[in-house]
Amino acid sequence: MIKITKHDTLFTDFNDFIRRSRRRFLVKQAPKVIWMTGLSGAGKSTLSIEIQNALRRKGYFTKIFDGDIVRTGLCKDLGYSLEDRLENIRRIAELSKIFVDSGIIVICSFISPTHEMRQLAKEIIGENNFIEVYINAPLHVCEKRDVKGLYAKARQGLITNFTGIDSVFEPPLKPDIEVRTDLWSIDKTARYMLRRIIPKVKFRKITIDILNQND
Amino acid sequence: MIKITKHDTLFTDFNDFIRRSRRRFLVKQAPKVIWMTGLSGAGKSTLSIEIQNALRRKGYFTKIFDGDIVRTGLCKDLGYSLEDRLENIRRIAELSKIFVDSGIIVICSFISPTHEMRQLAKEIIGENNFIEVYINAPLHVCEKRDVKGLYAKARQGLITNFTGIDSVFEPPLKPDIEVRTDLWSIDKTARYMLRRIIPKVKFRKITIDILNQND
Image (tube, rainbow over all chains, first blue to last red; front, side, top):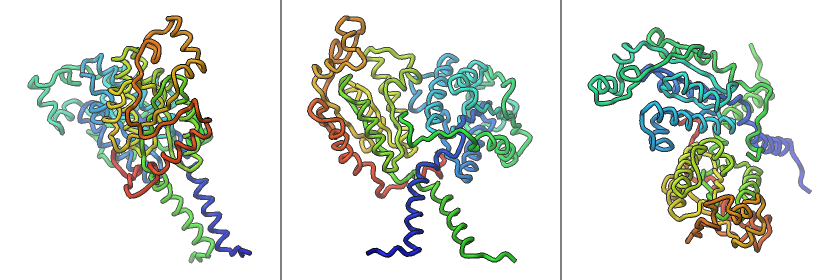
């Protein structure tokens, strides 16, 4: 006869807890797409990493998509004309939708310069899952930063269709969140954003049980 | 002064455990793409759901992709010519790669009729992460099943470019796993597949810490 000690009971509970928790942990968030729009050099990538790290520290499961990731793979057949950029955004939105449907918080960091592009993304992802964040900094500030040296190249005519130089940027009319990276520090901006993002991604009523759905 | 009782200690440990476990659970698998190829009606979708359910019961985190999912979204601009089907497979492979890089086991269920298509998928996903599964059933069996009524339509000429009728299917030469759904029951087939899949997706040495990488 096996005698069950208190320790064994605890251990069994614990194992059981582990098994159950594998199924549950992923669902304790309301998956959303945090869509960052703004000029090149406004701070989208920096902020998306800041926000991701802060969310992950709090136990949220996130995934970043940006131009570097999709342009080398999924969208490598596309150029930079407005038509190709629209198709680029469409595929990113479809990709994000698949991730959101899997329960994951997606952080998208794309210039997405026109109302049409952002509207398309919003329609594909669904209005309720779409958080539009305008990373705002004046063109002259972004151009002065010129981290990747792209503005200089665009001014010299080495790059064409460059947003802000020879391609339009239409600022969002009613973004869910707007930040001014020329006025605030990265830290302050990230904290301001998080205060607005966390209530939206916090788990509330809806349960999406990733591990049991049949897709 | 706050007195720490044994219960409190346990509770703290427990909370700590929860926090840590959120970071760890997702990584205890070797993410792979299980790529099912075969004729329409061979049993790819049925088996992918069976495999997914079995893997999820064991605590693995999986995601299914099939034609119905991608054709209505990411690839809705594509037709069924061999060229468009190749681009369809390319995007699916890129999509799967993103999921695998996030630590998720992906089950792809696509006819993917030619060596070229499967080779492309394998190259994009990476040979080490690619498990080719040939869901084999003779054409006459698939045509007799004709679950979606597509073979009848293809014979009547209502659908063109239909694999097996007026479009080629090149059986894989060296699939990692091959099953015969005309000879075995679904249950037996799934068990046979699982015995070969589980050793490949079991967590061994490599750690991909999803929750800490900066993408």
